[in-house]
Amino acid sequence: MSSRNAPSASNRRKKSVSKSQRANVLFPVGRLHRYLKEGTHKFRIGVGAAVYAASVIEYLTAEVLELAGNTARDSKKFRITPRHILFAVATDKELNDLLHNVTIASGGVIPRIHPQLIPKKKPGSTLPPSTLNTTKVLPVSKVTKKLTVVQQDITTVTADAIVHPTNGSFAMLGEIGQALEKAGGKKLVQEIADTQKKSGSLAPCDVSVSASYNLPSRWIIHVNGPSHGDVNAYDKLETSVKNCLILADLKNFKSIALPSIGSGKAGFPKQQAAQTIIKAICNYFVNVMSSSLKQIYFVLYDMESIGAYTSELAKLDG
Image 1 (cartoon, helix red, strand yellow):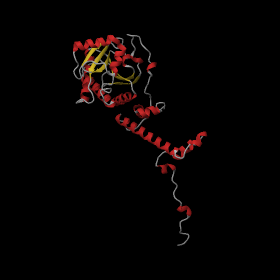
Image 2: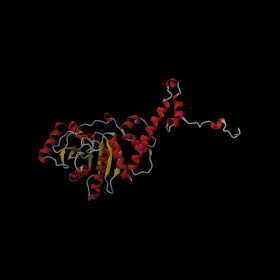
Image 3: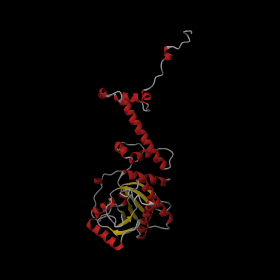
Image 4: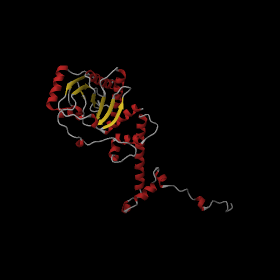
């Protein structure tokens, strides 16, 4: 064979492979390694540090994009926006712990007020609803009803009535009940006991009302909500919410403070509880001829619940 047809040394040379390809990652390992070597700490950077950093960053990116995609899908949107990424980070505990100090451009805000920054009020004093920590306000159907998500101690919310999820014996064992007992004191506990004697035990999904003490809200609506393990649990949750609204209309209440019924000790997943409760409220206002209720506050305390309710309310915005 002629030497002219023989492959040269340069042609026989293997095609160069990048460090990212060798590590089977998408992020640029070489660039990360160069950045890590800058400064005085370059003497402590191992060869595999850049590969490990690229792998972790790639995993976190994929996780955030997956959660943001789920949020966009639930909101019936075809594109992921910075707002969806913000909700994805806020609703995942591990990502929120890691990235809670990161500002996402054009992502909006999810208010998180430290309890010590909320001004204390004297017994019987009132707080205008306009000063509440509001994250979302949306009208319901064609009537003038507002659903508002707030992050606040429910005992400090100014509304005509507070909804207290309980059992058949009006027990104050849940988070809302304990907060009411602490804020209302012995008079409130005695008032609830007297109400239980007069009305008897609450049947499943049934409601009752009692006066409040030392609270901005004058009334408390007690509801015997279901547990997640009950038969037809979600139907019963809808009925419980509907009965709260019916009683509020019977009492001519204009506003109520509603916690996420069922998502505490009752064991409902927070996203499904939010979806069921908002569905029950919308169906109620669609089917009634008129209602005294003008404002419903979803009073929440954790970022996962806030993200769940905000994402569900975003579906009504379309």
